[in-house]
Length: 328
Image 1 (tube, one colour):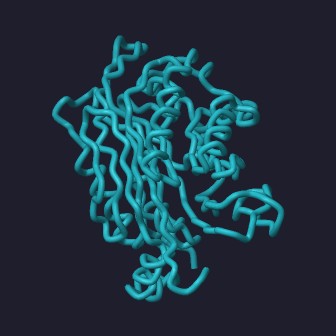
Image 2: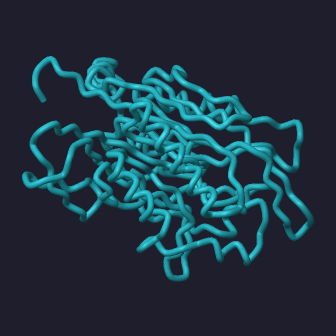
């Protein structure tokens, strides 16, 4: 990169209410991706499992029919075409069927439409209204960092993503590389995950989400807690963070009757000190956009010293569940 030039990236978080019709939801996502692109966005985050209702309110075998194999997945293929058309990066959340296993998965689509690979959700919740363990195996990919580009493809040098076998040819003109990390919903509550991804070089953290009211407790509202935890991840690792959540009321028939969740939106973009720079409300469709100078943030991250002064030799207790007998 030429001296004096900044490495800026514009990120976006989308927010909308889902129907239980795949084609309608994918069309809404595409409309909002186009809106984000019109605002200058380079990387655009769509909410978790946006193809339909959040079905994990119920334990019902019929909902396994919503899953599809990763290969030739129709929504991923459509988003590949859209990403290539607009020249944007799109993480795509979907319910993955992998032989007899099932995962809550996100595919990373680069700005030329290349599929850079997938991340499978690591932490699987199991509580009233959020019974994901019935459907999803724990992810087996580990926390992954994807190296994306913001350049035209053409004849030239080859670039291989960190965790993808895919190579793409890039022109040497106008080449910018952005390292991003996706994690999914319940993953966002674990600081270990955010730190693991930052250690691998993640420059931006992305969290697609489906979270709202608690069916068992009308008085429990986690939205502020939810935001503060992720703001902490951004501030502790000195990286921007993008969170996308759905809105609307969804009613699902369960084995015990009807269950209802009102999703509280509040999608947001945080800066590298945890400050919220853009935020949505709990009712309205939204396209949030914010620009960051990644080189400036990198300098600040390095000078702050939190990665310089880490003591991994003292953290072996983190490899235990109960804090006792850490491995030597």
